[in-house]
Length: 188
Ligand code: FE
Ligand code: FE
Image (cartoon, rainbow, N blue to C red):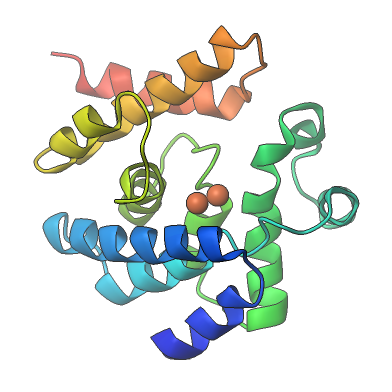
């Protein structure tokens, strides 16, 4: 599948706003892949498909999580998390993407996970800093991303966790574990 075929498949699934976001993630993921020695084409494909399931009905996503052997804890946490693992499943099933590295980058782009691969980190970060994103703290993460992938990732995860905590929302445990792992590894 080439880029244009992938974009056509994704465009049919998304709103115009979310499609433009996807193009931003694609552009940013390619830049990060070149900067941090990841596979450019895998970064491009993972970025194009990362939000594939974003607008599936909650009931459909819930059912897929329940029947396809996914982490059931997801159902107790923010439904915003669901489109990532469900997306990995549907991108394989409906778009025929079989590459496990690409599918994992889609699967973990919202929660993160301990032991994230380089490609997973790039997609997580590209999703956070693509040019269409405008929220407090994003510029600081953009600056860090120019020369330190992991420091940028730590700050983006920290921002996401504190954002949820300020709203009294529960934080998925894997996200805390990801944060802890990166901080322990990078502390000086
Ligand atoms: Fe997403
Ligand atoms: Fe996204």
